[in-house]
Length: 136
Image (cartoon, rainbow, N blue to C red):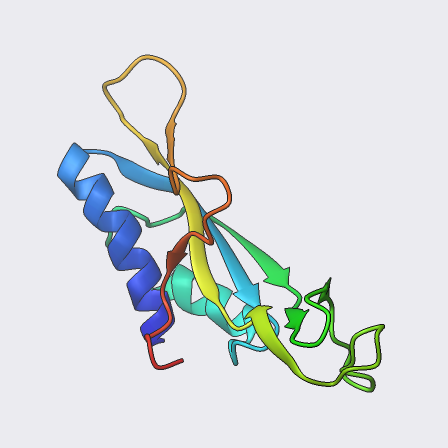
């Protein structure tokens, strides 16, 4: 539930600051993050009641892990039954797959003309708004 709360706090703070309402939340969840995607979606829907995000669409994307081989520096997708690089090395560091990130959100303004506004990281290569605690 803590992750759901952080996601909603981030989007709702901007909505409340600007007088809008959240219409879409886009969240990436790494398969190694420990988050159960259906449960996360349920919690987001439940916790959004009575907030600026009530009734919003929740888009969840499962992010598969990526690793960098410490032997040859290749980036690869480790497999559960064979977590090794094609060079044969089994020494690697995970570079993704453990995150739970609010990638972006869309706000709608009732008195504004035009389409809703989207918010996300300024850098398109950014992993988004990480909502997991720093210790994992």
